[in-house]
Amino acid sequence: MIPGLNLGRRRFSDLSEQEVLALAISSEEDDARIYRSYAERLREDFPDTAKIFLGMAAEEDDHRARLIEKHKARFGDTIPLIRREHVAGYYARRPVWLMENLGLERIREEAAGMEREAHNFYLKAAQETTDADTRKLLGDLAAAEAGHQKAAEKLEKAHLSEDSREEEDRSAHRQFVLTWVQPGLAGLMDGSVSTLAPIFATAFATHDTWTTFLVGLAASVGAGISMGFTEAASDDGTISGRGSPIKRGLASGIMTTVGGLGHALPYLIPDFWTATIIAFIIVFIELWAIAWIQNKYMETPFFRAAFQVVLGGALVFAAGIIIGSA
Image 1: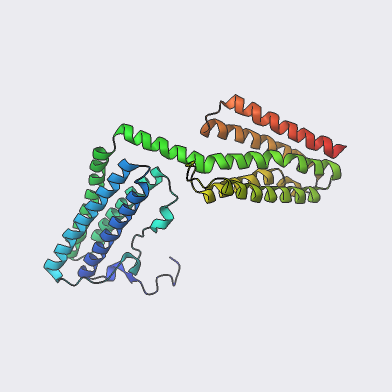
Image 2: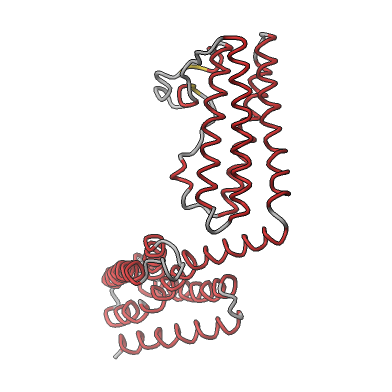
């Protein structure tokens, strides 16, 4: 823990039993709100999983109501205002807006992690306390969180059949491919192949590694900016369903730059032939990586993808060497 970060935050061990109960109530309320946010985000594309999260939110509401009743019985109607961010070392939740870009399976894993964190924390806290009443209270909270996990499993069986889950997983995979893989692959191909000619033409024309690196850097960054803006501006994703133009633009622009820099960076090495041989090897790796991605995500037969990519790259590569040697 970095000193100073917990200034103004209380230790869990310093909380009274009433404050522990109030903390549990606010935590249950937050989790219910998170689950409803997940359900709203998934409702259109994954309705069956959205029903599961709505059911989990209802479970959280039920536990919160029971905790409130217990608080009324023991401490009265006034519940202290204490939340997880007020307690040092208490398990945290990611802001919902940070989860917007996560895929379906990642959201499911995050929800399961939420339940595990709460369950484990209450168990640990119960083991460390010496007060019998507090130990029982924390044990009850741990049992409630374990019950959440079992309830989630029951809800999944009720709302998400094997066929529905497979269909949602296929839809999520398709969305991932359209939003990230396809524009990223296009960028990698453009960056790797289109920069071959200017980089190697410069290399063989000048035999100056620094000049070659600068040309490669300029070509890579320029192509990345161009591809990124073109991808983002070409389709807002509303009709095509290809997802956020910002995500697609970033994927395309970054991968274009990476594809070009791969065989430009070796020219930071002062010796021309050492740099060129390493650049040759990197080009070979880049082209086969593109073929592998096409095979894995675009379902293109590997040898067909390899033939297309390697042939195209070889032609551009040869053009650059011939022009630079002229």
